[in-house]
Every structure is written in C-alpha cells, then in structure tokens.
Length: 171
Image (cartoon, rainbow, N blue to C red; front, side):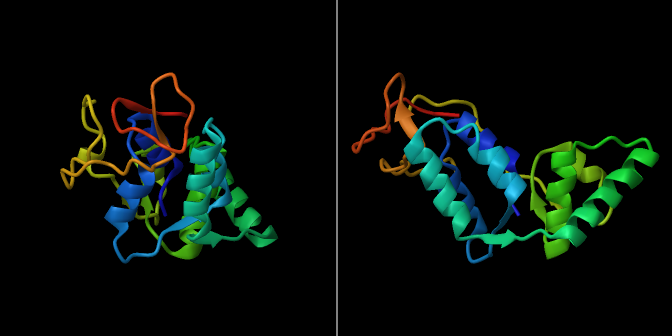
C-alpha cells in the first residue's frame, strides 16, 4: 500500500508518481484505500492530472470497509489514546486498511512506525532529490514521459502537448 504522502511529496517535487511508483513496484500488486485516495487526489488542481492519478488507483487492490472495519479502527484509535499516543484518525484508518489486507505501507510518515504489527517501508532517498532544471528519472537517467498530465510548464494550464522543460506539479 502506497501512503498518500508519497503521492503528494512526489507531486510537490515535480516528479511523476505513477512512473516512479510503477517502476518501483515491478510485478508487485499495489493497494489503496478510500482515505489514501481522498488525501492524494483532493489537492490536485489540474483535471487531467487528477484523472490520471485516479485511473492509476482504480487498477489497484482497493480495501473495502464495512461496520466491522470501522469498529476495529475505532478500537485501535481508542487503545492508542489510552496509551497517550495521539495518532491522526486518517493515519489510523490507512493503517487499519493495510493491516486488514496484510500488507506493508510505503510511507515516510513517522506516525505509522508507532503502530505495532504494521510493516512500514521507507521510500528510496533518490525519489526526492534536489530540484534539477529539467525532468529526468534519477533512477534510470531517462527523460520523463512528455505525456504525463501531472507535469506542466510553469504558469500554464495542461495541454495536449506537454513539455518536459521546467515542469511543476500542480498540487
């Protein structure tokens, strides 16, 4: 499961989250949940980028919730609160989804490391390099796809022909 902060941080760093996460995952199945979708997509301003990310998440395993899930998540939150560990509700929901599926979560959010029984994977450091004047993948050395709707030129709306020179993510 890929945490929402990974999508958000990659977009803020003008990186293509779909290309980077897709390359990282290889043949592994990726998972998401409603809360990750909500946190990741709500700040995307460009409609094409929004749809591109939503489509990517639509092909993932999506953790479904029901009353039993919410009872478990509430019990987890209540237990943390009694121990003096205040964890944001969103993070508890995401953790409960990962635990329900029996999967690890890829995140740099430190709240998840305090949740017993949850496997946390840190993102590779090279995903968040210092800004460069043009877009390329640090991992592969190749130029990013010109067609990524999440990368646009400064002060311009997305168009059918996107340039890779000085793009910025719209978040």
